[in-house]
Length: 342
Image 1 (cartoon, helix red, strand yellow):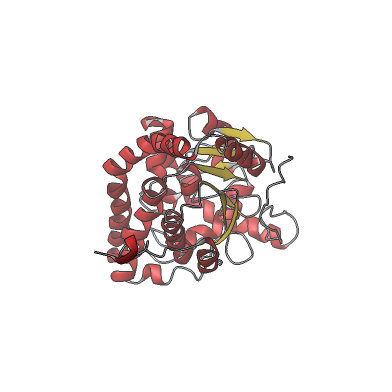
Image 2 (cartoon, rainbow, N blue to C red):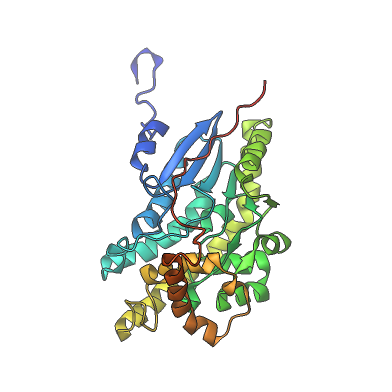
């Protein structure tokens, strides 16, 4: 029996915002106000450059956020005016090491990045998408998703020879319906903000530059509910995705991994000229894919095989000043909400 009517042991020490803000400073800006946490994906002081490291950090941070009860509502967004278009060309070395490193990245990270969003987070979540881009999982796994009117997205894997099994195709099937989802997953054709709204993938489309204003407006509205009831409400919102993940997520992620290993065994994965391009080579073309409307058209073999050359020609025009790259890196600071009028 403990003395002085006190518990024999205190609550376990768990991470606090000021601690994990430092842990993940290379990958996310974390800002909390009145229990509303804004997670802004980034790499260092610029937009997030997709890499094995950022891929892992996303799932790790989400798990840590779930341990902090001070996070009552969470907004996921991206630094700047687009969504994760850029890539770290040197950020995939450990990802390609066989067998253990690649297994851990694909078997654990690919799955955890998705499932942690719906199984670990018990509080309401909002995805705030400021513009076009790739790897849109965290935004569209949120309970409510707001996108800017210029947002264009895709499931690009098949065009580069990859099996589209990282769950973006699965979410297209879920939100768009089987036939339409299969079409966009299997042809890599891009879909627009209005299509996402019409087909049930997002909640609202708002003018460029206003997604975070609207996200904070919704979060503050939820704050007028009791903590307990809005948290229970969020569980109902996540339930359809939880059932989907239980049935199909691991099958999708392992299918992508198996397809990659087959191509590695065949010796035709590893550069931009291979039958299957690996991550860092696919991402070289991202600016072109989102700066033009080429990928919004119906796809065919010529569109797929000719895309790398068209991207190279486009980059050459950018370098010669003939074409502007709208995604050229420029200094930008994370969004901060406007003060609430008392």
